[in-house]
Image 1 (cartoon, rainbow, N blue to C red):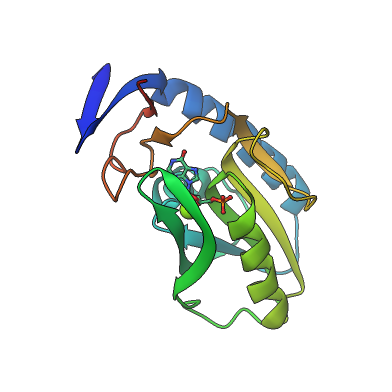
Image 2: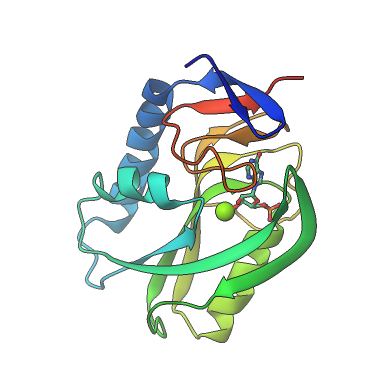
Length: 180
Ligand code: IMP
Ligand code: MG
């Protein structure tokens, strides 16, 4: 599909699955290099719901022993960030003392990853790193280091590959941008 309509909005294809897949290959290779021969079992933290598809693609490329823990955070209403991050579901396992790789679909303002880092520090994790499929550099206002970025994109609203517009569009394998 070149164009999709979700509720009142039309979106056009901008990033085909093949390009997403190549970018995930590269970011996974970096993570594999950093965690090669590690003696601990790092936790991949899936930030629901947006990260589901990225997590599936990323984890099958990782070559060290790892485990998955999930949590759910929300901040968007429609195409706008409310600026407030709410933890809609707590962590699904105890991660005290563990090394954690936060797996995010997209870093936009950065509010979500800042809130997540606070939550993880409170839980007493040994270390946390951030891995995101997408980064909007023009929207990112924090100085927190983002360890692994698969792709950088302009500051436009997108859907697909896990990302949604009012919970729709997550199932598309390609990424679509709002057609203005
Ligand atoms: P941040 O807290 O502003 O960095 O936003 C992060 C969260 O907002 C992401 O995990 C997404 O769930 C959502 N989000 C940000 N930008 C987009 C977008 O362009 N499309 C869909 N969801 C987005
Ligand atoms: Mg998200």
